[in-house]
Length: 73
Image 1 (tube, rainbow, N blue to C red):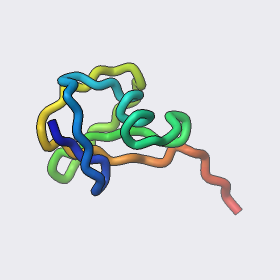
Image 2 (tube, rainbow, N blue to C red; image 1 turned 135 degrees about the vertical axis):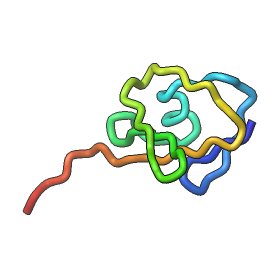
Image 3 (tube, helix red, strand yellow; image 1 turned 180 degrees about the vertical axis):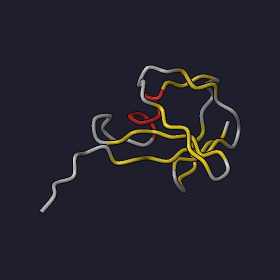
Image 4 (cartoon, one colour; image 1 turned 90 degrees about the horizontal axis):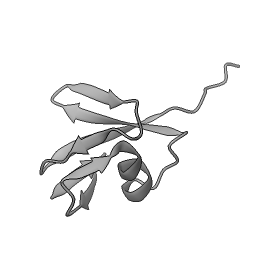
């Protein structure tokens, strides 16, 4: 099964992955710095629960959002 995070292509044999697995094992990012969203046409569905299972489908497209606090100058 092929899926994408941004423009990067990944493959998995699993039919279900958690948000945490996708962020840590595939995107290689820290879960306290990035969040995951599923791109669906022109909209996004953001996942807030790291342990939420995602039923994987071939060709899914995910995007990462920066969750680190921004400092105002």
